[in-house]
Image 1: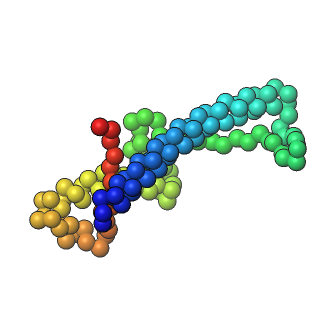
Image 2: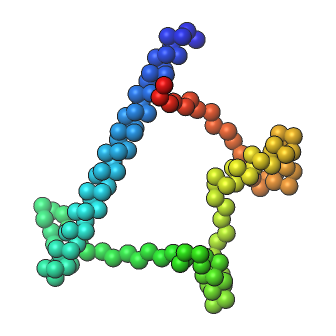
Image 3: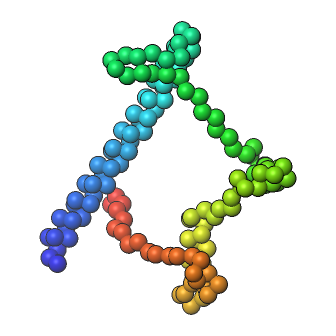
Length: 136
């Protein structure tokens, strides 16, 4: 491959990453604007005691959604409470993907560049090669 082809691809990659960064920033700004408008409209509708209305063929309605999480530092206690009261079936154990990848990398280094046998068949691995870009 000629250097000009490499340089063209490098320039295209740099431009695409810059465009993505710009779009991500715009997306974040739009998401913040949506959040503000949603709050303002829901407040106005509640104040007007209006739970739904139609405008230009679109129905707007108030919707409520509950979010729940363990109190900070009480995850184990919450899980124990759920299990104790007969709700063990909604409890799942997970391993963070980044933590698992770091662990596998560490174990592979300790095991002559191979995944330990006790993990074969229960963990799959792959490597992705990409081109990093940084300023100057």
